Image 1 (cartoon, rainbow, N blue to C red):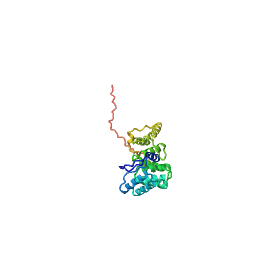
Image 2 (image 1 turned 90 degrees about the vertical axis):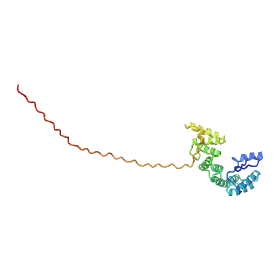
Image 3 (image 1 turned 90 degrees about the horizontal axis):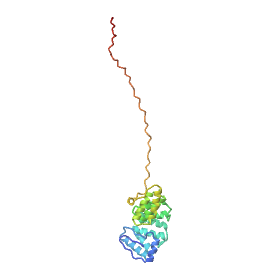
Image 4 (image 1 turned 135 degrees about the horizontal axis):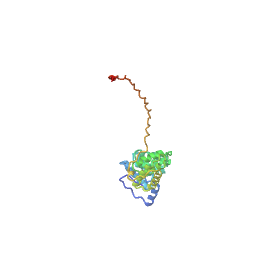
Length: 257
């Protein structure tokens, strides 16, 4: 089902169409936060047109709203370019619109951009960049991004393997309602146990995740050891012995008998 801006209700969609949309969309065409005024009106207009099957009108409405700065319209327009609905299929243009929304901080667009890099769709395949965008979205609590990043951390694909952090991310995703993350969690815990590690408790899973764009390790400058000079020999002054003035012993006098 195509969702909408926060605080707005969508029009009901027929069950057959709803099932088709659910099969085609990963999480649906989801509207993001913050649009107002003409941008919000344009977004809602595009949403109604899309649900009615008028993809050309949806593309035009979302194009105008995206140009006005609506992050959700940017992402939905990227979807249309990705699938060729209402506009010629252009995965490069899809990446561009995902990236615009991602740079504005929209976590769902960040996840979509990471998926494009991971699949090499519209861009050269780059697992390191995929992990970067997954991480940006995961830090905002995006469950799909948490699972995608955990998978890369388990396999060591584009990032250094980190089973501990993968377990934390997956437990966060499960707490957010993504039960499918349990399969990956079992894999992560099994590898941790095989490697001598311990499983992560639920309490530990709520710790904030650390960023992937780690700072380069600081190089330690090894200073040469200070040469220790041998101790200087102490000069010994030999003082003459003190003469002792002892009284001379008198020889015993022998008396005649």
